[in-house]
Length: 140
Length: 277
Image (cartoon, rainbow over all chains, first blue to last red; front, side, top):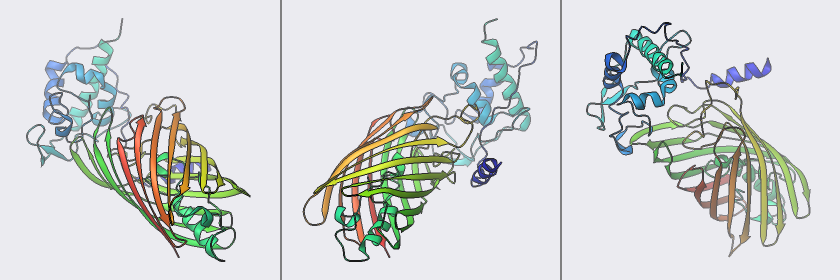
């Protein structure tokens, strides 16, 4: 009990919302309507690839880590849990760490505009799509 | 480790009455040096954590600059860390909070780091040997997402020893660091973090070094510091060379550190100054 209170006290020292898994699952059976072509690619282009693009050098990424590149489905599926925990929404969490507050107008450029933000519905769709893509890659 | 003051002073043999206490206060402050001791989590590895009687208050400031090039980020950071400490007899406490400018993959940010608190005690103060224990705590005041903080509290108990054979002082430490979270939880098990002071969620730390009196009140020395993860994580090894100048009241040092294993940083320079009241 004391440890729990102590931990809560320490946690209160920071007000940062931490990424959490949304625990979203793909509908069974998978309707197959959410794909890279029908949803993922446009979502990433709208909200992510101004920084998370393989073509950007480290100095152009405005803080985006190397290997966090979402301009291809392969890049996205390298880190589906990470994306879910930072931008997805679902039964267990609503994550809005990403996109950040400021974005470049041009990929790799200065942070000169407010970032467009996905709606809650888009975040939920993102999590469902990621869950389905993960499920589709599992051996059956 | 972070022995800003002269060995004789540190051991309370050099100065007139009252100096040992003051110098020990410097030692306690020294235990909080962000660029040197904190970064390697050997806060307790202080050979001078006792004052020999009386009590003293001291204040210090540390300025550091580093470049890093790891698997995810290329960048640099600069930090300023004020600190205060109080020492009485064999015991001491200290606190510090770093403020940073961080550039990572082209993004610039400012922020505070994790707050640091230390309690330490000298257990053995016989002859040329000093030894003791310390408990260092880090509180998550820094932003984990921006790379300034761990995102959770850390506890770091350690033991230290120092052996003085004039004009040389040899010291070593062994510690254990652990995040105060469920290490088995998938929600929060990051790799080494934060960028300004990377460490594993759980690790063993160690250090060893030596200093020698040079000319006047100047000492030169070197040390190595390492960490081995328990469970998942990354090994870390750092080598450092330093030069220090000190009087019983004011001490200053400069240290250059090289990240050898684990990419904690490429190179880091730390200037520290401490003043006792």
